[in-house]
Image (cartoon, rainbow, N blue to C red; front, side, top):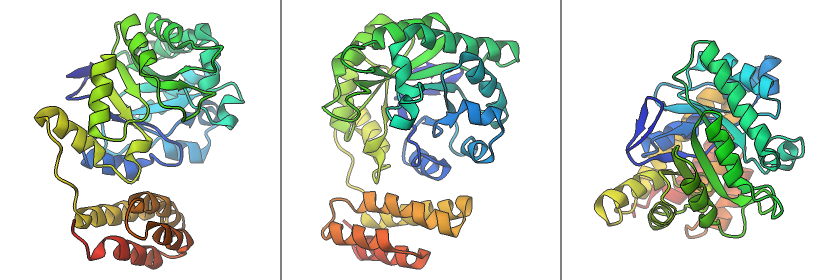
Length: 329
């Protein structure tokens, strides 16, 4: 049992924030399929301060997906603190600070993983957000951070950053076991997650390369981490959370998910996207998710090509029918 603030998580199974992917519709589906904790897509602190409409939309959290943290990015402590107070109206279970995004437009601007080069700044950011929440009447809202192993091989700073964040009030630390320079390859370094876990007293969540229940269990056992966060492993596979929980509880693998269940979930997901974003945008965003679902199926290359070229909801659903409609295996 993992406890962060007043929220308890049975196994500590978290969906990772992924820009352009983990919107409310996808978070709700993952929650339905066993994810215990959510985090919004990363939100710009500066844009929130300027009351950007699109940015505020990213902050919406439905009752079904709670507990859900809201992730902020930036590099100016006072700005992130101000943004944290602004988003309290969305009632997140925690404020998570992005210190790991490797995207060039984020890190190149000094945000995200670029913060890993300055552990003291990381600490000041956590301190400022914690102080703001306390002074504005939100002492029970935890501040958490998501970090990487470091920025590059010259800056393997995860342990120092973790300690600074803990000293300044962080309630949980999620570690992706690669540097920014490594992006998403080579294989995740479990030793750095293990080092962070042994260096702090607050809960540590491991992240990176978790694609099935056996890998999840190995990360938990090898690193001693208190929970795991899954990003790319959930793409087209929201069932990974249920599968991991089943494996941890029973010591055996859960039966395979039928195509009829997958088809129903895809249609539900697509319907939710359209309701949230309109038919044009919702249909187009659904295409990438369906392409992930199709991966590994017979004729998947052709099916992915068809879905990526589909211009209407009906055309997308035709591909779904081809892939999942007449099979139940």
